[in-house]
Every structure is written in structure tokens, then in C-alpha cells.
Length: 229
Image (cartoon, rainbow, N blue to C red; front, side, top):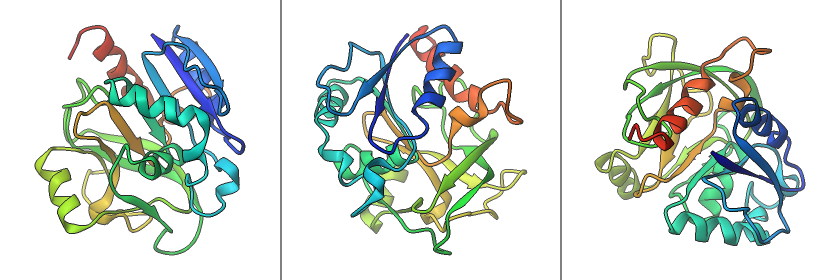
């Protein structure tokens, strides 16, 4: 699998993503935000961090980077795009995903382990994962409070676009670390080829960390490309 990982000024999780995919035997490439060539990937990663210092709104300036136009074109042609944390914010700012990421309800930056529940297996990013599966995936953000209007929320539900929700260890929705509407932690677009999620699976996928649950998401992507869809 060929994976292109975009680096913006202020990205700080690009090398984490690179390490995960390279260690799994994939061809991973780092792409600078001013470039115009995605290097013919199977998957594009918009990583976490603080692109352009998160000035104005998170992701609002990165949305105008030259490479993002290529990412948008790639997504419109059906290419897989995964936005993690700041990458999710960029995807909403670019219009590839609906909704917005607001300031956390308690107005504080949070960095901790957090459980999320898989809501559907109907996507390349959750392929083969049983709905209801609880994953321990770290979060680290100040503006991860997902919001969308009533019509948008109805569309997300009607189209089975909600992939992950924040939950407790039992999968119940008693834990919501940032005030996200209906505990939403990750969504896909209507065509299901673009994922945005605030939790960091790349921080839970290597031997050096306590939780390995992020591997299940990367394994799902691998299954998809291996024909398990």
C-alpha cells in the first residue's frame, strides 16, 4: 500500500503516522504542504498537530495549502483520505466533511487515553471490525467538540456516516471528553472514502505504547485493500 502523509508547518504527528505504516511494510512518503504531487498514493493521511499555529481557526489556513487542492481532487476521484485530529479540522474546513470542530466544552486542552466505540463496519476504515467494539485510543486537542446542525446530524445518521463515538470502558455513552454532539468522535463522507477522527490511532499502534488498539483501524484499511470489502 502506498501512503502519502502531508506535513504542514506545525504538524507534529506526521512522523508517528509514517512510522506506523513503514513498520507495517507499506511504502510511506512524506509530502510537504507546498508540493503539488501526492506521489500516486492509495491512502492520504492528514496528520495531527497545529498547522500554521492554529491561528484564525484550526485547519482554516492549511485548507489553502497547495497540496490540499490535490487532496480534494484525489478524494473526489474516490481516493482514501484519513484526517486525524488537526487533519479532521482541515477536512471540515475544506468541505470534504460536514460539520465543524469547536472549542472543547470545558475550554481546556485535553491529552489522555479515551475509549471510543465502533458504530459501523461499513467503511474502509472500520472494515471487519464488529460494531460495538470498544477501542482505547488517545486524544490530544483543544478544539475537538464536533458540531453540526439538525439536518446535518440527521443525514449523518440516515447515511450511517458516524464511525466512532466516545464512550466508557463498557461502550456506554457516559464519557464525552469535549462535549461533542452525540459523542461523535469520527465520521466519513457520503461516499465513505474520507474519514475524519479526533482520536489518534497512530499513537496506539506500535510496540512502545500501552494500547495497541489503533492497529485495528490500520488492519481494517489493509483488509479493504486486500479485497476484504
